[in-house]
Image 1: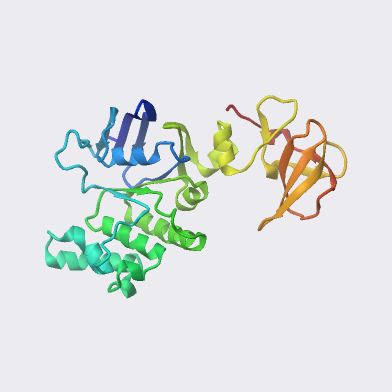
Image 2: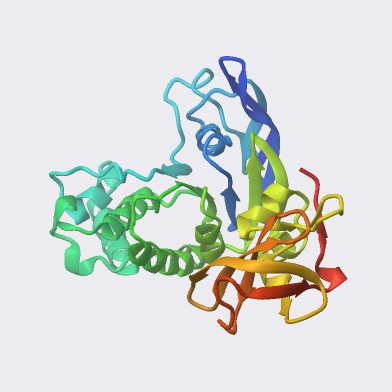
Length: 319
């Protein structure tokens, strides 16, 4: 029996489809990211998964029990499934320790004290236990929010764009810390985001969602090297359409720059990036503009170049 099962979920708002026949099966302790642009149905999906939204069709099952939506359940939601938002939702006049303890108000005092201490230690918050949320950084506040959600040891943790309000340094540090911590806890985690880089830093298994439908699912290497659509390919990098060939594309790092032989073009712009210069090359044949990586940082604006590639690197992609 599958631990967490979503069966043909559909949801529409004002005749506009947010989810269409979405299905997913997760085993206990599985950790997956769902990536999609704004409006792809990510947040709607999580709310249905948590029993907080009424779906038009389909069912959600957790460990053999059906998750009922608010239409079928007097008090919406389940302690076994916790949904974390990007806005933290902490009590501003309660300390870090008090926030984490709030879900445990009806538990025995000794257990509450022990559980709070465990979470403070696991999340590196011992030195901040008596501070208020306003005295913390954004990353620290998000750690408190997640620790609070885990206080009653839910079976599933749903993360809805939890890092979108953080700066790059805070975000990368928090993702690194949380990735190791959540995997060690063996909690089933679903992380949704519009940022593929965040998803790949946190998990290896990724599902691509577009307009409420699953486009592709796999690990990072499978998705990067074998995208099924242009949308999936573009999540990893720009793609260049080969002139006079139907639906045939190359990634910037798969194009070789030569001084003779190949597709002729001129460098019209470049950007200095960490590991290479990103060139914009206008092709003589048709005038298309390609993006090409220059790891040698050799070429300048105005240079005449020839572009070559290995045929095995060509991606044939539908729309």
